[in-house]
Length: 500
Image (cartoon, rainbow, N blue to C red; front, side, top):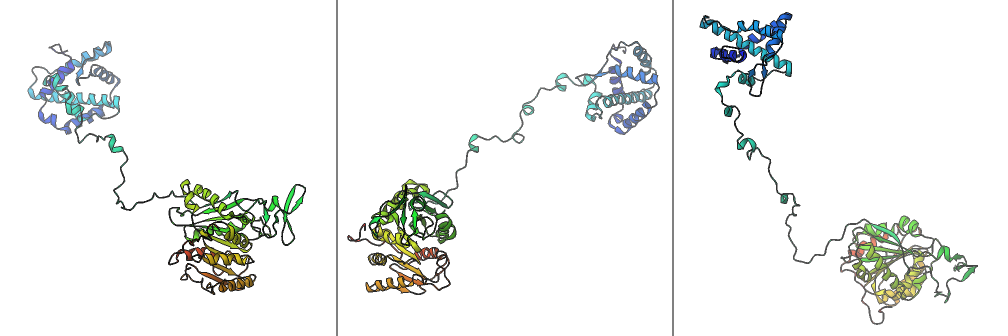
């Protein structure tokens, strides 16, 4: 304690600070030298010196105001050390001013060294220069309000440049699409996108099972029985059982992915030949669905199962009057369902039809044209090596529907029947075209065209659906039909032929 009753550390710090020349307070080089010397001396201190320094450090402790106060240690050893140390810290009154300045500088350096050592011991890092300067400032120079000013508005609330931008909930709402020009013409909504649809659908109006009569003999079609089994004996004398051959009512339906019921379209009805199934032959080997899609025409496919894998051309329900109409009416419901819009039933129920008959498919083709009930909807007929009979039925349809087209491509196996049909048509005053009129992309079909094309001997009957006068003949016919100018229209009906 000094003469004023203050702790020695406080008195010494204030006195030393007042006696310290300004050059020493502002120059860090001298202070750093003294600190380095103090640290070097600490490494060679004796145990007594170490205990003395510990007692000196115990007299001072940091408080929240940032100045050093006495701790009042009760250790007798430390009291003796402090008693021994106090006379050395006081400067005699008779000491010259130059001597007091020198002692004050040394004491200030020692105080800074002790503070730095304490900080290094407690925090393992050097204190900041601003903190040292704050501890060296006398307490009397600052008031409480100066040292602890109340927070201002800018301290609690950041400026606009420091703040994060505020957003309203409306900014996160979905943005409307860019403005588009609106057509003045009424536009139908775009149909939903879908993949190609190729599926088998059971239809009650399909060819089989059939329990009626054979129109050729007016006898029951199922004319053979064995116990509970019933069957049909064909013209070749072979018996085919109803549960194996004439019991499949499925229809192969194909709707291309780009088909649009809102646009003019056509329904292709394909009657397969003998010894065929829908999946193995019509779909996979003969690629009929693929030809429909590849043509690019707005068309769908219906291919009913005839006699299953049998050498038989029986027409089943297509023998009956109105058989084709009932078949197409039921198919319209399924097509509308498959295209995703039940309202399309009326569209499919009136859509034009192109019938393609291959080989034994000539029989259901001929009877559908003659008694099907909707022959006026048939826009065209394509026979692929299929003129085995029923010539009068084909000639009748050609004569009554002069705006439709008729094509028969044949090999040597059916050449004589085709020659006979051509003579029949010419006798009725109908122009017949022969030769290579279908070859080449610049040969579109024309309304009322009647074309017979004989292919060379390299063409086989088995592969005729995929290779006739050209590769993929069904695709070729549809492409040429779509390119016809003027367009091929539905044959106009007359009172005598309506619903025939």
